[in-house]
Image (cartoon, rainbow, N blue to C red; front, side, top):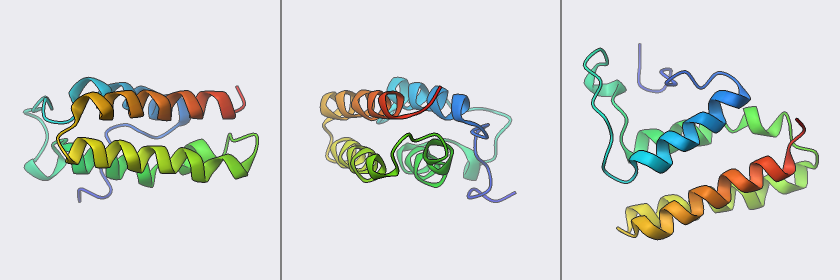
Length: 108
């Protein structure tokens, strides 16, 4: 199984939202090492954000207005940039904004 195909259980909308909580708790550098995962499957900042990007279609399927997607994705990228720059506080605020934007713009 390759890293790209291993999605850490993010297979539906609720799992995507739950994964955001994992990122909030573990980013930028507090990732829990799971002994049952290969090195390539272990979460780190890059892998976590790659999952959020590649699984964003789970959010898009529920958007009330597709026009909200660019702003939501921009917030995700700003969050990643903050974490990469070493600003964990700003990254945490932005990941919460990302989640809030998703929840405000999706059908229940």
